[in-house]
Length: 322
Image (cartoon, rainbow, N blue to C red):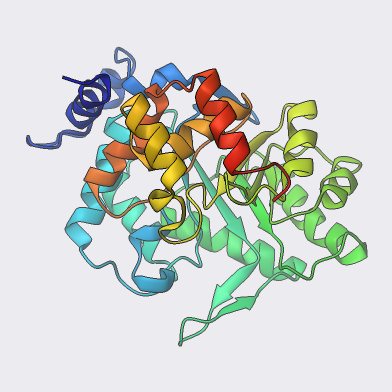
């Protein structure tokens, strides 16, 4: 029986797959250790979270729009994630829109102590599902308040200012950032984060306020945000890569990942996620999924240990800076 099989089975037990899943109470939580603890913890502003979290984007319908394919399974995934020790959930009001936040509230409210819910603002969806800019200072404030209302909370662990691709680090960016700073000062959020940014954005923001986290596209096949990651490492800022498995199927079918996984008794997805965990201690994973089966696979990446041969093979197949 392989080590990977044993790890996956332990995670499946944590998730309650194959048995009646029971959401742990706060009292139970304090006495429980989890399989994902092996990946360690990192700060998220005033919070301390496990490095393996969950991104809820995929729970909505196709193209992150409309209701989920299977509402009952979506609720089970959220409960199973928290039951397995996940204490960092990433979301946004424009996922659905509203759909994902509504699912989170239905599945988890009242929320267990220590659950950090992180959202992002800066976009909205129209009736056809198109993603539109919604990032004037007053719009950002409105979106923060909508997140709070839909989730049923008074405060969020952090909110990321999600920039559009054409954003430049200038006066408009300063005004956007100031809107989130005011929300933090008024107690609506614990920390200010940034998403889809350049190194220049981060440096300009740090001249004005503390930044608790950065969310950028980053994975084995797309390392263009390496400079932003380096700044976050140097300043001990949490870095949460989105699309950690590449976009859509992406890295799951890559032959080098398959070969490395075969040798280390892990799946290609687990190799891609463990590479991120191995890369820097400030990286927080937020892989998403619609099913408990894939959730178990993703969480089990916490226990996959890359050796020097694996690191060398991955570095050769995926040169830095791509």
